[in-house]
Image (cartoon, rainbow, N blue to C red; front, side, top):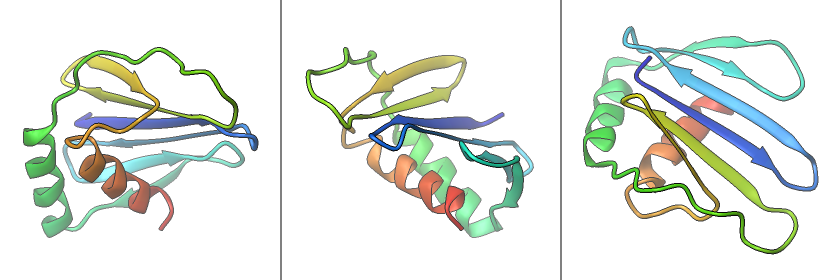
Length: 103
């Protein structure tokens, strides 16, 4: 596995997951439904790898007060970090994985 994104929370109580593997294909698991296999083309995979090279995971963030929060968890290079606000280096990775998730 290259990278995994998990999004949890919100009033809808969603729990979506996408894991991208070295062959460029991903396993997308939405809260409601079965896992789906989707593949990145060569250009998309190269862009994802470039974005991952710039990624700085940092530390997990404590849950801030409030409701309807979305928790983003990235697993990359054997590290798991969760955030409620996206740092700048996370945004391109999360957006690309979200597009793959919602294709």
